[in-house]
Length: 578
Image 1 (cartoon, rainbow, N blue to C red):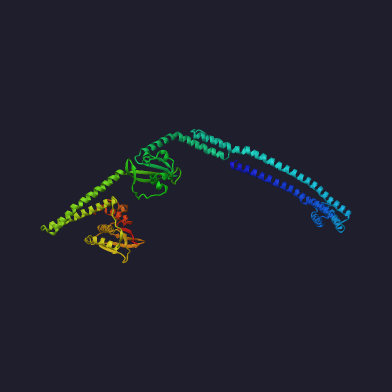
Image 2 (tube, one colour):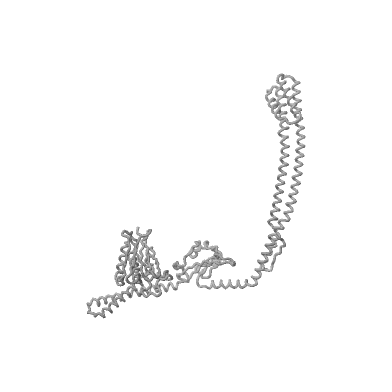
């Protein structure tokens, strides 16, 4: 029989016996109460009325009281006639009392009244004795039946007490002992229940598990322990800090480098929750803030390196938070099991990058002076102030002039890039005329557009809000975008320029009619020094990177949309001036 059926049968039987015992007890007690009530409400009241009438009669004789009290008790007695012959006695008492009222001095009537009252008391006393016997018999019957059913319930409960717990506890005890032995490493332990109850099924499942554990222990346990130790050693030997957390955000491991930069000991970290550690350690809070907040960064979003004091100096680390998921055996849905926080030490690269920026800034600045001198010399030669030049020499001078302009532009871009990298962008953000900015940029590219016979078409409303921007930097950006559009558009084409207001922003758009950008390169065009492969146009690959830095420094945004084979559209969005 199943355990559930046993429990249901045992508890149900006890419940039924309790209901039966309660029913019999209530019935017997009710019967006894009714018998007792008959004595109290009938005979006892009659005795009380008779005694009160005798007391009233004595007071009437001694003239201490009138007859109203006697008559009141007589009326109550007339309403409480319950025994055989009691009615006739009461009627006779009424007759003699009426005679007594007409002749108070009649002693014979008084004797008759006393005798009749005593007879009433005698009849009720006899009734009380008779009914007491009945009540006593009822009480004896109640004791018998309640005792009999109580004894039966006790026997059933006693039987269940010794059998039912043992049927449940003994298999549990045996199973517990087997589990204890398996926990101690004895995987040969088996459980044998011949019962067809749930314990039999449990024993079968337990034995299957024990067999698998025995096979697993024999084949893989030593190897697993070795591999775990190897992984722990590898993690500790890594030169970059690594911290691992489980799905409940508790620290599983932290290698030596991680402990070194946090200044904590293993026992202060391992097993602790990320939130608990973050309360007392600012560095831990910075490292784990994304994990605590369940924040998921897009892979394309790069974060600035963290500045941490390590190895006796101010160092830079790039943080990466990896979500770890596994697909359990036999399942299809991956399950999240924790996070790994990696810190890559990029101090050496940061120092090299800083040295590179300083070198470029210095070289670019030094180049400007000789380039300016070359341009001045070219102007003197072209003006003919130091002598006439022939046509061939003029062509050479023109070529030198173009190369000097190109070199000056490259030098300017390198200086701007160095300024951006060192964080020394100087902005003067004021309320500016958006139409004036785009007009200046168009004018700066007028000659280039005329050379390729490209028409610049401006679409701009007459009444346009002012834009909050650095006029010079924004004009530089728009000039660069229009220059690129002219460079990559076909001859005799049109470059469309748009300026519009959208929901608190002014949007500049430059649409060319060139080849466009291949989809795999669209997201890279704003990277430094990047040039689309196969491009024949000259350039450093810095113009769009500098444009992005200038616009974002003003709180704006620059984007690109490209239809390969049909052209590209660059958009710049800046806030409207309030």
